[in-house]
Length: 519
Image (cartoon, rainbow, N blue to C red; front, side):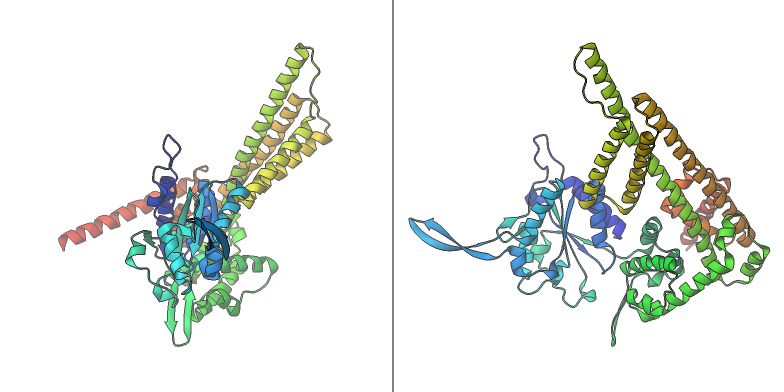
């Protein structure tokens, strides 16, 4: 299966293993909760989906690469304990708690999460001395004398033998106690992830036409050569930052990440052309509806790879705007939630104050609205920092959270500057401020919508109904942020081209079915 299917399978397993009955006991007892064994090529995303699952399920995660450990760190250090047996005292060897098991308890204490995933990577590459311990771990869910706490699910991962000469085969007894999931690279699934994560558009454009280079590992007389999904994603981060610094990304830099000389050279050449196209075609002007006739003339003579690169540049510009719109929407939703909590507290304080006056009692110290909002903002900050430290927040969630914190601080400062002491007056002022931000969000939708319309103008003028238009509409259909945006913005041409694309697909499938029937 692909990595997306594996992730869903593990999520379903987490839900099943952590389900409890009416008495608070796990429906599937720990002894029947088989560890999951993920086997797949290196760099395919096995570790990354563990982080995503922990965040989405809001459970703890402890991850170890077991090849970095010795037998002593895995099962603990020996020490002598004296015990009485049959009226006589004996010296008995005991073990300190395993570092790995202790890490789980530390994680539980730090985060307050009683349930989680223990992820052990490269489990089939352990040393000779540690191999029996790993077998015991998979079979008995323990390291030495110390068991994995109840509520913690074991997931292990390893590479197939063809990718690592240190791989050890598990025997049938061990395999009969685990759930083995074999993961294969799938570019279509990775591209969906890449569009959501903001992988550099040059990499996505390059792999769209050279999918065979997405995950390629070969052994030659000169050693191992490889290009992996992890390598492409890490390279994407560097290319993005180098562009901001104005630094070139040459062949040598690419080879530090894509350690397959032929692929690295090819991509480095493509990246150089991609940057050239950015200057030649001036996508910013295209998205403003200012496309010069010379651009259409140049594209008419351009090779297919160049035309695809230009489409990718247009999509990259759109996706940047779409992502900003979606972030603003998420920010407003979270901001509204925090303001409603603040509003509730204002009302409760007002109610208590009224009751105090009616009962002729001494009123409680009433916080100034600005101070109250500042206090609530700091509490929210502390909560988000704790969630971040616990690994429960994704990168996007952290960005949105910081934006909300900045807005709350600005709102509190305005209340203080304007010296608003009345709760109702403060709430009305906050509604005005929130309305301004909401208007800015609507403006961003209009701006992104105008860019999309200009992009369609350009695509129609440059490519008509050609393959490039099919690629353009297909990418809009699969991009996480473009799909979200198009649920908000009505674009008639998008729906028209999308409908035509679906009809074409149906006709092709019917034709293939009829052809197979005739054969």
